[in-house]
Image (cartoon, rainbow, N blue to C red; front, side):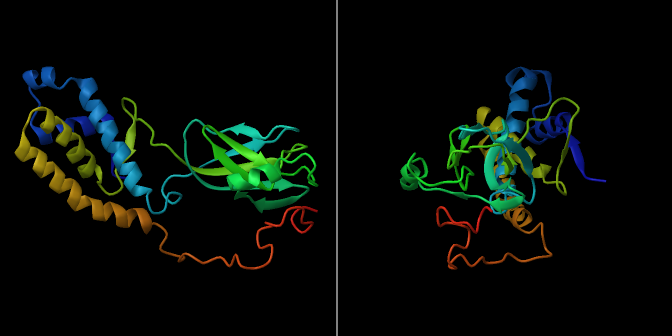
Length: 234
């Protein structure tokens, strides 16, 4: 069984660590405030765990169905970082690459010779643009790292072998700063610093089975970079 903690347990541990459990302390540090400190700590832990290998800890996917003459599609509401995107057309699935802005005029040139199947993409604010502009219905699968989710009352959080020590110390530091308890602020910072290396190792070593591999992209048309190539879509 995972070493889970609820939001209430994380908040209680924060109050205990910061020694703000009495009625007077509750007035100085209302429930909503301490909840917010814990949310901030969860966000920090999420960022550190996914810094090196963002797809190995949290991963989501979304299917995009293209429509003729439409190049922009809305990203998922919890989208944070793109891992990869592949597209299936005419029974073939390929990985799409991001285009450079300097390539956009060529990819949107109405006089260009294209088959109407997107071969490139680019993230644009809350949208993803697929180019050349689709001229039919195709299916793209977006693999991405989602944003950290805010826990609700009673919801459990997987502490990943009790990394909630980091959450508690991070949140307690904010409490101590508000109370001008500088010795406690320093202690909280030390606890967080001691755990940061562990968090970094955990974040980049979840897959201990297969080492990372180098892809040879020097081959001619390795990823169908040559526009109009018949080798990509048949």
